[in-house]
Amino acid sequence: MSMADERMDREEGGFGSTAEEGRSGRKKRNSRAKADGDSKKKQRPKGVSTLLWILRKSIVPLIMVIMLVAGLYIGYVVLGKQAEGDVFSWATWRHLYDLVFAES
Image 1: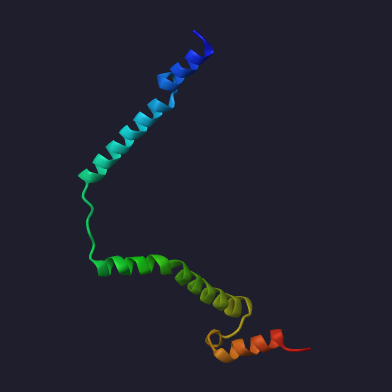
Image 2 (image 1 turned 45 degrees about the horizontal axis):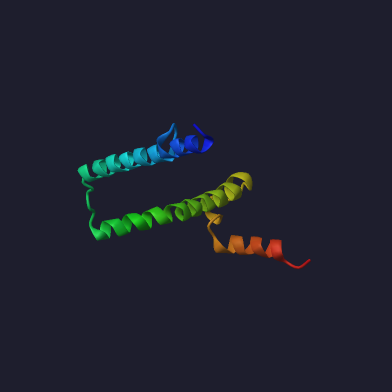
């Protein structure tokens, strides 16, 4: 057998040929499609789907805001040893801003 014949044998169905891989891939896809078709998805009402989508998209910013408030509280009350009532006062943070960004 010549080298060209061997190459053709490999391409047509030799060991590890792409033709076999393609057939096995189709079998896997068909079995997945059957499994998906057998299990029926529960359809949610449009309003519930929209609400879940909004909650999924807003969870990270919501957690970030909560952590910002917790960090302000811990930094001002625990580390700074200041009064708890002053931490959420606008005047406190305005004064801090003026101290940091004041022209010297």
